[in-house]
Image (cartoon, rainbow, N blue to C red):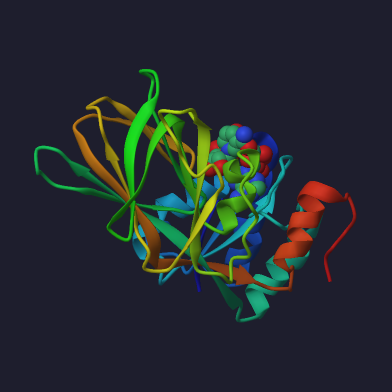
Length: 269
Ligand code: NAP
Ligand code: MN
């Protein structure tokens, strides 16, 4: 089996990376940056997102696992003191794979040139630096509302505990193939009206945001934000690709949610 380790870059993460790399190669596993079967992220969720995006072109061939050093570690669920156990598990056992849905984002330019396509593990956020965004929001091709406000967040189920949660969105179990749209400070008065509640769309239901005013937009895909001009539309739906997590022990999603947000307790079984 071929593996690659992505470290956050701090001393602690680098030390764990070096230890894991040494032991796993001694167990005859091959370190391969280009075509790894397993990508181990050592750091926080930010590091995990980075690792995911580095290999997003070969998702059907790569599984991910995370060791967390310090931060929350919603995706990175192995602790540094479990590293030895994890090394043995990786070396000895063929791992199980758990798949979670992803979000597909397609940005089409007004000039009719090439579209951009992205995959997000957490979410996309559409904002602007120039006042409010004004969009026509279409769902499954039908006009739904005209949104005016700070922006919109469209998240995956596993990303529903990230920015989406801070916006008052619901937490969605990743066995549900869905995306969630949440508003950021929508303007609601006699003139402008939006639904207000988070919307949850199933697979194949497309949300299309069409800017009413030609502005520049800040579009974030997970931890990475880009400035876009000349935007005709932003289309979101459940992607056909999925992310694959390597599982060496069960750690149910709701235990993960509880341990991250409610209790300190050890929910592992
Ligand atoms: P960051 O500023 O370190 O992220 C903010 C926090 O979100 C961190 O504690 C991070 O965990 C945590 N996080 C990331 N993905 C999560 C998930 N799926 N479920 C629960 N918590 C999650 O920035 P970052 O590390 O580059 O991560 C980027 C992500 O942070 C974005 O995709 C966005 O969802 C989220 N974010 C949230 C807020 C907010 O809640 N108000 C604000 C900015 C960004 P770690 O500490 O382990 O990295
Ligand atoms: Mn972080």
